[in-house]
Length: 138
Image (cartoon, rainbow, N blue to C red; front, side, top):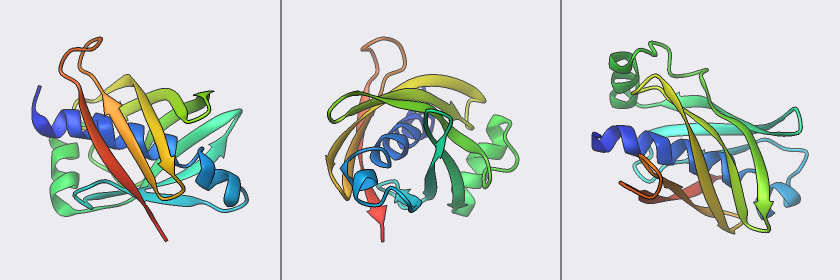
C-alpha cells in the first residue's frame, strides 16, 4: 500500500480520537480541529449520534489531488471519521473513510493529552501498521 494511503488512514484515526478524549471534556461545547503531522489536512470533530465524526475543513493542494485520484473529487467537506466511540479511558475506535482508496477501514487512536494524540492504522490485522502524532489547532 502506498505511504500516502496508509497516512490517510492514520490521519482519519487520529483526528477522530483526539476530539473525544480529555480535550473534548474540557471543550465539550466547542468544535475541535486537528492537523496531521504534515499539516496537509485539518479535520473538525463534532458529535454525531452517540459517537463522534470528523469532517475535512481544509486540505492543501497535494492532499486534494491525492483524494481526487482515489475517487473523491471534493476532499473538503468529506466526512472521514464516522462513529468513533471510547473503548477504554484513552482509546477510541471507529470507521475511517480513506479518500485516496475510496474505502472505509477500522481505526484506533490513543489520547496522550488535551493537544496530542497518536493514531494507529494497519493495512490488515497487525500487518503494515503505522502511527502518527496529531496536534490540536487552537
